Length: 529
Image (cartoon, helix red, strand yellow):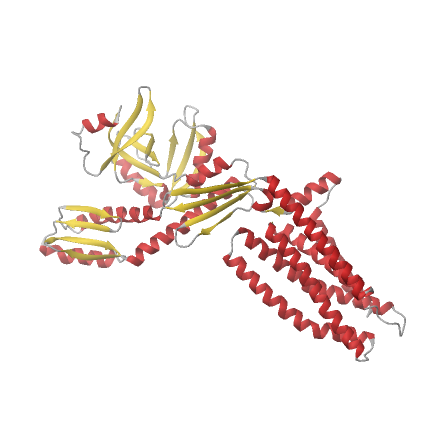
């Protein structure tokens, strides 16, 4: 019996030491002790301060891109199948009009749509036997919008993570408006972070058909006011004489979706630049385009603006360089954005709220005061009402809080203001567990049982009730964590950890303390409860 009790006591002591080291580390002085505690317990936005953004993903951009891609693919496939046509036009974001299809080729177009364009419906156009309308299915359009939202959320998270923001929260916000909430605790430069999040950074490499021109009017005038088919006019970098304009292919040779990596570097002149690498498919496509157009200019387009237009001097496959009037910081940010992936759609800035650290310190102070007052009041009640056994309950309660704080430090969980509320609720649940056990022990003693038997039966019978209450509460906390955002998740995390710790302290640790007392009490002595 003594050896078992000693083993349990050593186990509890080890748990305490591990938890304390998790909170304070190995400090050499008081200041390092404070720094360790401050750094190991991460604070959320409402306590540490930071930036709260609400963004709206313009999902129709993704639908438009899908329609553009299908339109170009349709042209290629019809050429491969030797199906002549007069024109292919995008009517809107979900409709493509095909004109001039011979009657004897109608079945080929229908087969193409059925085999390779399963998300689209092909139908006849009333009044024009040679025309067909290709329409994106409602379910496919909805899936494209939802995928754009999820991809945008992942891209924003990748960009924020690479900036080193501690424990950011990126989640859906609102009901059906394709909005995202972004919470960034402790950001040093919210303006820069906001710019990087909102930056589309859509990289496109397009062949230059004509240019550069000194103005938009000059570019249009060179073509009689009408651009050649399948081209567009884009602004370029400012030259010695001012702005420049380029006439480029509307369809890009490769885009940011074909990138496999991007790193900041320097060009041959020592200017900041970005080196990028392409995927296998992107490299093969890029190699075909550059190999067939040696001597022409290749426009490097970022967000519909030409940043550079170097001459193609040979076939380029899997590597390239983006140079221009960049600062070292701009190159770092551009490489970060490209590396994290292009956004599938543009993002509209809706609102920004900045939480100052003074508000966070005020919240921490009030939360700590509330926790201490509640803890002292509860401990005083347990001592008065349960006398000597109240010391047992208070020790278990303190151990519960130590385990909870250590778990937050070890797991890197974020402590929020609702999380502090979860700590206070954990104190209440811990007291409730001890009350259930102590009242059951009292009941067993009133029935005339010996002290040892009363303690054993009290723990055994109260255990089922404690398990039921804790399991149901943890299930509720899990649901809050799954569907809640940052502060709500903070409450769910602290509550769940506190409840698990309470099962250990109120059932195991408290029982060890009782066993220790019973082993050393005089025979026939009453239990102080």
